[in-house]
Amino acid sequence: MTARTLLLTCCCSCLITSPSANALSMTAEASPKRITQQQQHKILSTVKNFRPIVASSSSLIYRSANLDNLSVEDAERLLSGDAFYGNDGSSSSGGGGSRNPRPLAAVIDLRNSDEIQKGQKVRTEGAKYFYSQLLQNDGDIDIDATSNAGGPRLIHIPILRDVDAFWEEAIGRMEPSERIAATLATAFRGGALDRAAARNLERGGPASLYTVMMATAARPIGMALEACVEESSQKGDGGGGGPVIFHCQKGKDRTGVVAMLLQSCMGQGDDEIVEAYRLSGELLGGEDATAASGGSDSDKSAGGMIDWSHFRGSPPSAMIDTLQWVRDRYGSIYAYLDAASFDEEQRMALRKAV
Image (cartoon, rainbow, N blue to C red; front, side, top):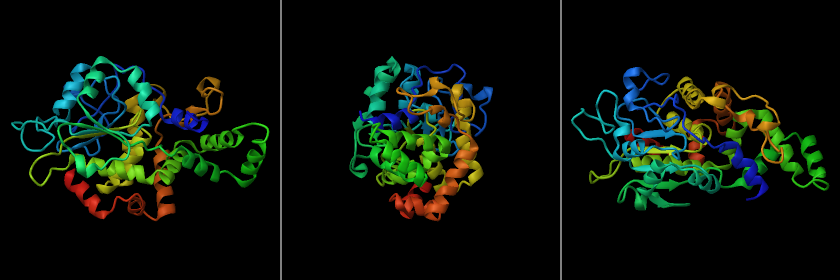
């Protein structure tokens, strides 16, 4: 693993080593803000940050944190589709409670390979069983060719695959004087420029992380959006389609960016998007329950190169600033989606699917 890869993946991949007994999750009919006692039987107790993109009993696209801590019961509920039931008894496919739920169609993993390998080492028995039931595709896949063929699929679309492009963008955002000084320092200290870029990234907080990500990973982001549409959509012959889960490590950063774009396609306004993002910190709890702030040496990665506490939590200002950056740089959210090769035809298919 390169130093740049270590710097980047640590930021988005602090492992959730065990599920919290008090962690909140959301199902299709849940309020965007809180889950009631009557809804407790629908909660996946071993998945954090689990909720639909659109709070509706017919919603088929869900987001979550990683699935490495699944209990066997939760694994079975996901695979069968029972976890996606509306709380009024209707299935995720719409209609009354007499209809059976659609089984899980796909899991879209947005993490890099090294993060996935770390997760594999600590998977519970339930998670091992869950992943054993998925048909796996890795890397650049032809989504159309294999969509919904033969059972639920595991689709790997690493958002941060181009680590060098990420850091070059981060370096380009430094003040010229700071960049020049850091460049000169590399003659005496290897990696000085990347460390200076990391300092600059820290100062910008989560919004800086998200906008660098969006600037350098438009195509992988577009692929994730395409996969959500393809895997959840009913086919012309009446077959296929079903609930889809997309996730990264905590379901907050990479997942939050993809969720923001999906919500925008669905016509949700900034207030709804910002609130959905803010909710991640509440649902994750622990260190993410509060806004990011400068921390101590214990918050730094090996070698003391970056303080990850600057990226904790989900403060509303981070998503507000990200939305504004997209509009300033691209003109509109839809213009960014066009740049990510997720055009209006695909956006219409998404609206129909959801």
